[in-house]
Length: 314
Image (cartoon, rainbow, N blue to C red):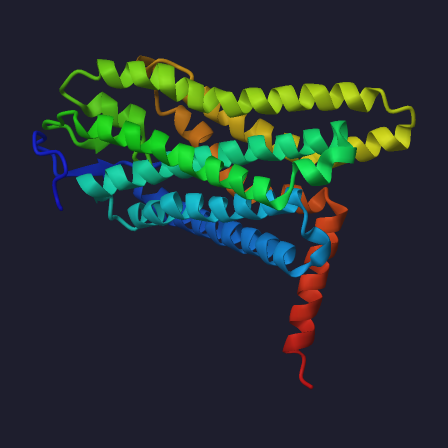
C-alpha cells in the first residue's frame, strides 16, 4: 500500500531532521545511537529487576514495568528512523509517515496515562493505606493498564484518520525529525479546520485529563503528608513520590510547551522540547526511578549479582 491518501499527489515525505549540515550528521548519529542503547538497556534492566524480585511484586512496580516497556516501544518508534536520516536516508513513505505518527501518539499518550495511574497508586498508598491492598488489587491494576493502553490508541487512530483525509500537493518537506501532526498539517493544501478543532477539543481533553488526575493526587498527598507529625514520616512519604514527580515535570512540561499552542506558532524551536518528551525522558526514567528508590536499587543489585554468578565458571 504505497499511497494511503488517493487524493494526494505526495507518495513520500522528506524529514529534514535536526540539522542539514553534513558535518553534524556523524556526531548526531553517535549521540542518538548511544542514547537509544542506554534507553533500551536501562528500561530492560528495570523490567527484569521487577519481575525477578518477589519484593517488587507490588502495584507501583507493576505499573513501572509497563512504563519501561512503553518507553522502549516509544523510543524505538522514533530513534531508529532518526539514525537512518543521519545516514542520508531522509525520505519516508506516506504510509510509513502516518504509521510512525500513529504509534508516537498512541505510545506517548500511554506513557501519560500510566504516569496518572502511578500517581493514583501513590495517592491510595499514602492517603488510604489501610485499604491499599484491596483497592489496588491485581485485577484492578490490570484494568487500569488496559485502559491506559486502549484509550490512547483510539485517540491516535482518530487523528491519523483525520490527517489521512487531507490533500498534500507539491510540498513534501517536513521541517522536523519525525512525523508529527503540526508540521504535516502545515504541508496540507486543503483545509485543516476540522483537524485543528479536534486537536484543541478532544486532543486537549486527552492530554490534560491525566495531568489533572496527577495534580489532584499530589495535592491530596501533600495535605496528608503535612499532617504527619514526625519529620521522618514526612521524608519517607515524599521519597516515594519524588522520582515520579521528576518524570512528570520533564514529560508534561515539554508536551505542554509543544502542543498547547496554535498551529501557526509552531516553529523549529519546538524540536528541543519534542526531544525531551520523546527521547530524553525515556532515557532518564530508569536512572530517576532507580537512583531515588532503595527497593529498586536493591532489586537491580540482586539481578546483577545473579547474572555474575551465572557467568562465573563452576
